Amino acid sequence: LQGFAKDGFKSVFNVRRTSEEVRTYHPKFELTQDVQQEEKTLSGLEYGGYEINPQNVTAADINAAVAELDKLPLPAVVHCMMGGRAAMIALVHEAKHENKDADSVLAKAKDLGLDFNEDWQKAIKEALQK
Image (cartoon, rainbow, N blue to C red; front, side, top):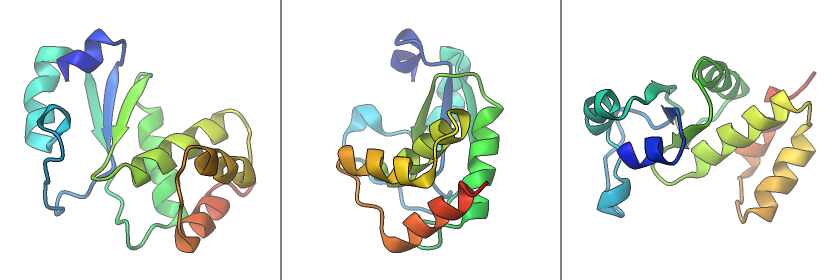
């Protein structure tokens, strides 16, 4: 986490559920909650989160996560287990602040190589309804 602070990030935001098994894909990027809580004091980063179940993503969850992210100083590192939920929240957060619609979020996700399933797309559309 100290590396993120050195790179100019001010916060870390976790959308992974506490019940998820922690898998280490690369030790440098393992951000377990214990590690984050321990290192945030050393790094000076703020920490927040909102648990999102990847099998049941709802507009309410997306909006609640974005609202929690809004409480933190930016820029923030947003993360989850594999990156999909984190990308979704970051893209919706950006869209809400730039008055963009769901189609622009889904187009940007596609440009980034992300393939949100139909349930996620529906939740994103509902979350961004005006």
